[in-house]
Image 1 (tube, rainbow, N blue to C red):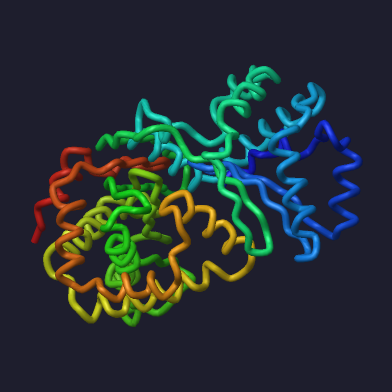
Image 2: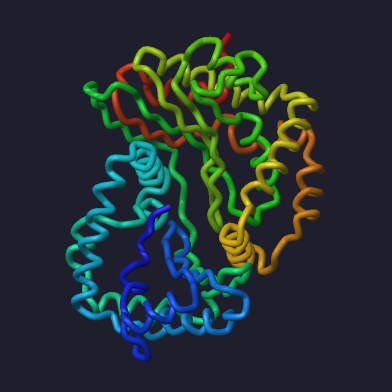
Length: 371
């Protein structure tokens, strides 16, 4: 998640100079920050409950009345260019940017959060004022409170998924970094919970885990026993009207083809023969992880804001748990068949990837269970 909200938050407003704003926040013992994801821009403050009205007023002032001074814009331009350099050294972020670029090519979700360098270098005060005037309007903003306060701005219209690939071969790199994903669904779709359970069934693993054949994830058992990769993690990334469900892996060059093969075997197994005991274990783990992710006021607040944008209400934890409990093995098989079987995936691969099978062969693995 990229922190790209600084151009607005680090300067003054029409009511408060930058110094006044910093002093007011510090004297309250409060914390003020912002960040941008692919679909939302979030401004949040952490403050004592007695300072709630004042904290909300400060956030409103920043969002509506920032002065956007030329000197501050230039300073933030440099900050974001440095952030871009940091992102480029994080191979997981690089691969996921490539994955979105190929999966959602020629649409808004295919763009990176920070945007191209030329945009950062050329954007000016007029562009910022026009964007804020157009998008920072009441119907597009959610105010959420859980000891912190947040405004979220929804994304652009529907984005079309394209089964396709991006390969950036670099044999000088020690390890291959690969993401493979199929199109999933948005937050509010009825199949979201089933795909979350399926994602938990695949699980994640790295060499530091140990565990061997006692691991709950069958793919983790296979990977550990066969020494197929350094790590893998399944993901289920939901947006308003689409999503990416898949797996990110870091492999030795020689094991890339075998790892892809076993990942696809597991995906097909979800469509054909997943067991009730596996599903029960995954449901329990999903409920535990869901509660762990809500540990603290900031994640709770973010969750409230996201749910308000997606569902127009906050879904109580018992309701979510009941929806998870309703999933069974047949449901997993039906939903996975719907989204995985015979679908063309999106693939992003960076590094020594000579052994990565060609796209046509990978597509054949989406319906043919090789013996």
